Image (cartoon, rainbow, N blue to C red; front, side, top):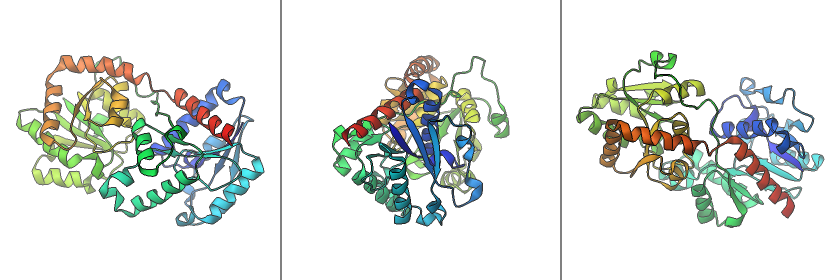
Length: 387
């Protein structure tokens, strides 16, 4: 099978959730001769407008059945990257390589009669979250995703929750949506050593008992309500720090401003843009982690936490239950008091944390990038066979 890939997430130096998923699935194909030997992979990519954002390392020393294709029409301002010229250039490339199927790690898909297309949808927060829906980014994501659904032969969703949302909002036939969960990076493992302060702890003045949350300060992360919950925990006498880790400039974030006004900033620590290794150290040092989101397409921080052997408290929603199963304490995302009670109870109950640790380790072992890569190939094969 000749597989054309939208390789832009593979060559972009800035790495977010989409890029991580794309690279991990791609690396699993590279590592498995059994999966890749019967296929040709054509990597269609664009150089970012800013040269410093281009990372061509993935293109070096590729096996013979992995071939890069740069589309020159992508050399234009980024605001035009979704335009007709780009899709025409992509369609010409698909015809040239005689692709059997085209796969994107994003919702973006071209309209082409050359081969079936299979985009990936991570979540529909831009449809379901009123705050995101009103933004320019939300409008652009709605347009891009609607186009991807309209042009797709099949879709890949990263959770059953996302699949249900796709079927409900866009009317896509459920038989044409395949669920392929994320895997877990090998760096996220429990430590065999007694918890010790690592460099990331020392740099951010983190010591003693702490609770960890991971992710940017965006409305659906629910940090304002979690601050109310943590104030309840602190008022009960807990000395636990609240550590937030993400890509934010935290001092310019809403949660930093709120915490300072509330006079609790000394009970919090902020870590900016940790590497995966630093993030793993933060997980392993935490007493518990908490995901208080009002919406998640998958819940990667929950999976990473379990893989590091740390007990989890999280919002009670389908996507997070798909990841954690019986290995987490759940609370309603819109109830700060219940959230605080769940956090406080888990901080105080060492035996229950130990039980959740071993449940979580088993649960996390079920999510691998090798499985994700295999299931993605199966989805692409089904799409190619129906063409």
